[in-house]
Amino acid sequence: MSRHKTSKGGLKHESQNSHHRRSDIDQRERLACASGGRAASVILYLANSIENRLIKLLVYLHARFPNDGWRQYLEDDLSIRWPSLVVSGHSQGGGHAGIIGRYHLVARVVMFAAMDYNARVGRPANWIALPNSTPNATPSERFYGFSHQRDQGVNFAILSTQIWPAYGMDAFGPVVNVDDTAPPYHNSHMLTSNLEAPTQNYHGCIVVDRHLVLLPDGTPVYKPVWEYLLGAIQTMGCFQGGQPTLSQKTPICSLMSPSQLAGSCARDIATLLISCEHPTC
Image (cartoon, rainbow, N blue to C red; front, side, top):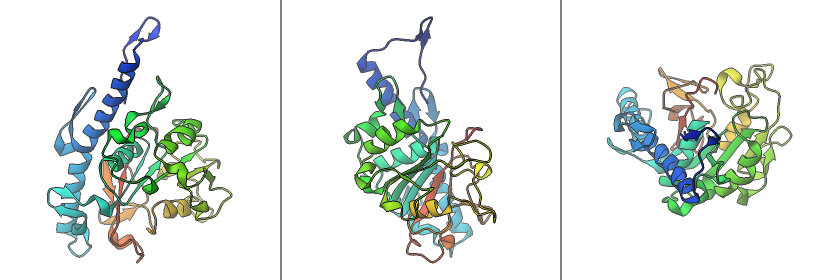
């Protein structure tokens, strides 16, 4: 999301204070996407924000399917009942999920192949590295991450040694490779894989339909990982045309139908899935 001026010598030299300001701008850009507003390269009207689209989606679903329990995720027709939501996202969507968790108390935050890193100062973005600069609403024990070791878009070494620890996720055990470990993966909040991907897209293969690693019967190999990351929720998917699907690409967000939670204790928790819109995801 960054925009940097360049000179003949490459990146323009900036002071430490301007590095800090740049990271603050990135934070404001994330917040503009989540709630609407203006920040540097991002101008997003409230109507198109993640929060407003989610509210409108819930209002619609309650009106269309009144017996499915969608109303329980709203305080009223203008506000979200955040503690009832697992907020999850892939790539850019994972960054949005992370910052939503900093600003709202949610049931859980799950970030797939997502990191916000200020390379110029060599540390995570301010809103991750300096949690007290935000409301820090969701406690660290509710943050989870999953990324492939060969992800072409995410530096896994930085993600696993700087980003995830900055969220406090390392307090619950080291990074666990799901390829040779069974659920519950030693209860770790930091998961990875190094399986071959059929399309060689290691950024998308952990969660995007067209890049998934599948078993011979067509079952996604990472299905147990998703189930673990999303808690007691039994099926990960989006609500589309009245039917849940695995992880269809949507403009901003989708919500999983409570009726698809397989009768588990998570019936009162829904999952917001924020997807990356970039064609390479």
